[in-house]
Image (cartoon, rainbow, N blue to C red):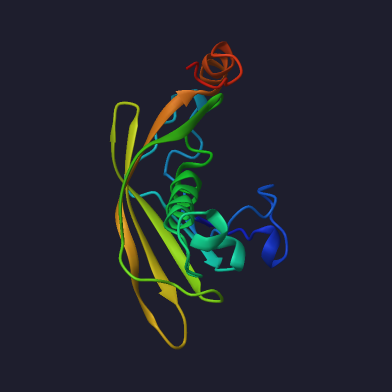
Length: 178
């Protein structure tokens, strides 16, 4: 079975994403839908697609990573992270989440403002707590189509409470002493 959802940008979402990012177009559910939440381990093949229409706020100029009005690489990688998160959302069990830990990505072509791109993340394999995804981003246009970027992304499954405890144990960030 499939689940479909849209973001706040395109008419509301049942996922409470607040419009941060694109739209999830499909996420296959695992066959263990009824399994106890704490016993859930995601299975290879889970995938999600997230779309974004590039705005001025998504450009290299706006993000301070360049001086051209094209889709910034960090925004592109963020879109891939969002797709990977969505692919395993609800599949990790109670009290668990995943965090990105490694990104290997090639940004192949520039994308102008006004163009729609779609990021796709597919869970290739699970190695203990590590979730290894292949990610790609494609143009979605009547004028142009093609691959914008591709790579691998690794997420790590963590206990949400323990993870946040470690974050707060570090205390507030301070400037390094000189």
